[in-house]
Image 1 (spheres, helix red, strand yellow):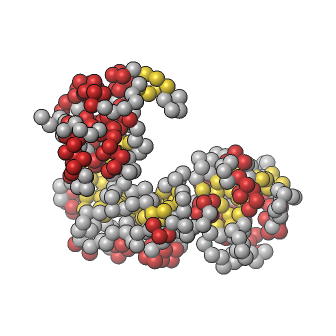
Image 2 (cartoon, rainbow, N blue to C red):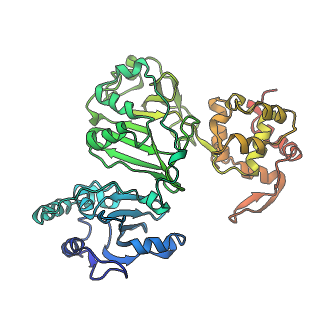
Length: 474
């Protein structure tokens, strides 16, 4: 059976391969390929300039790569500065960045436990050698030094304190409902961190002490969410800065990194307690209904399906309606706790977004109550004295959201498919029929439309009226 290839004899210019990495590399080179994860081997190389030309000099001066993952991602050893030990960081193939461990010793320990949060290294089918790695670390008395948390994403942007004055003091205040008191102690503990900032003491204590997991210090433009999975505890959290709710604005940490919120939590049977009395082994919707009453509603199993086959029960966890618990039955019971955000219809608005908003105002599709700070602009829009793009620019800084439109399930389904090119529905295709086609910014087909004037809205209106006929308010 082939072995891992290892070449750690020399580091790129300006760096040294740590003795520990050399020693563990010698051992890794004796292990059968696949037993420690899905990678080819260990190789000390300079960080490719192409990864980020603007930051290449800093990366190459302070870091070098030592492990290639199959998807093209790299693991780096990074000098944080000062007396801090070299940290291990991920340069993702899709531009994502994060700290994996605060030291090489910590990384090796996490690797031996299958806790790196790198699927290729943590894969159960490719981990028969992890016990051997743990034994090697014990034999060589390798222990992680105490080290300050290193935030690689913030480090890439420079001074992490640059935007501190822009940060709101806290997430919203949550007043729990009676449902919170009905939860078991472990589920209630999960619910208690929902919606909180990732740097709050409550979240730090829960993730690091209760779950025994590493807490992501930030998220970034390239990876707006990070999962913290603790299968033995029956809990998986999602931390994200990108909750589409006005009460949860992005909190800048640096120019392109953010302090995330706990946005979602999945609770699973391993938590060791039922949720609201619903047995995890329930075999039917009727069995759940005996405990929770009739379902709140039913939805299709997938967004491209129409038949509502999945029953769900929604319970508010706080009096303001920020937080929700949902029990779902689709062959089995699943439980999700979430911040009630919206879905994005147009994350990066363009002229077509403005045209649609102008049209939506004239047809009663827009939920005008969502814009209490812009009554005068809404009046001007209704009189056709302003354009839809003006409302987008002034009132939708993070793009057009689903809940900017009327809250009707059938309308919401149509909008989601139309904006996301699903079920043969697509705003771009419809507007190309009206205005003709040309190459867009990135070479894709786009409508010949430069301005969302009312003349343009009127030209598109007959086709859009057919598309939204069932929902137009006259």
